[in-house]
Image (tube, rainbow, N blue to C red; front, top):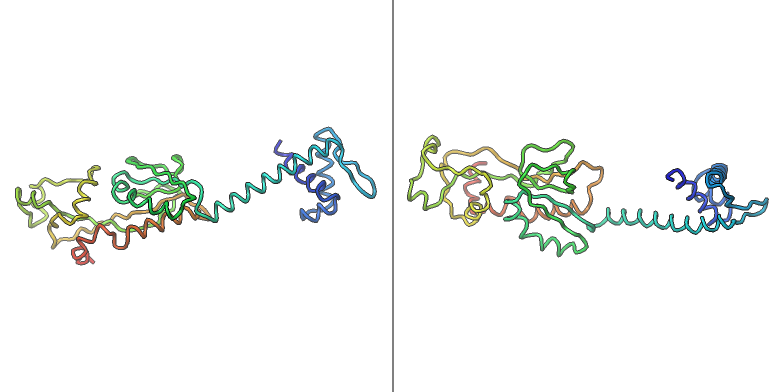
Length: 267
């Protein structure tokens, strides 16, 4: 069936133009190729489509039927191509985004109504994830991640650097005291990130935690990255979302504001 699509399209142009020569000029191919394609189509279908004379051509009953269907086929193809072009030139359609669960819940989800209000023709589907993500197999257009191990074939666009802060609550310090040197940390109850990030990030954002060991620097930085499949052209809807998130987070990130003076000392 697929091998008949091109001959049917050529035949439709012949019927539309009323001559082989005019159809050939419209399609940018030779008259002989047009004639050969139509003849091969007639042979494969087992019917005569065109009555030929030296001065004109006319469609047979079968030719008129195929021409009507061929016009619909070309219109559908042209509409499909136009739809793809429109989709590629505007922020519409469906955008599937994956975000780590804790980070997304606290920092991304609350900002999404603003993004959707700006792009009302876009359907946004967000997945909050807490596992290693395969962008392609999960059908994502974009993944926001702080993972340092990126999958092969992906493009990673850094959005910001996540600072690490060694801190404790005032209540903890009152109960257990405050360490003065890194080696004293072995005697304290240190919380290592295992998914409880949301609760303690609220305290960081409020500025209620007390920074510890300020004479020592935590030099490791974990970047927040926008990860997406490698493509020649990045869809505008993906680019728009990345730009929005980058603007929403700010530089430096808004949650670093309570500790801006401390972080400035690290530079």
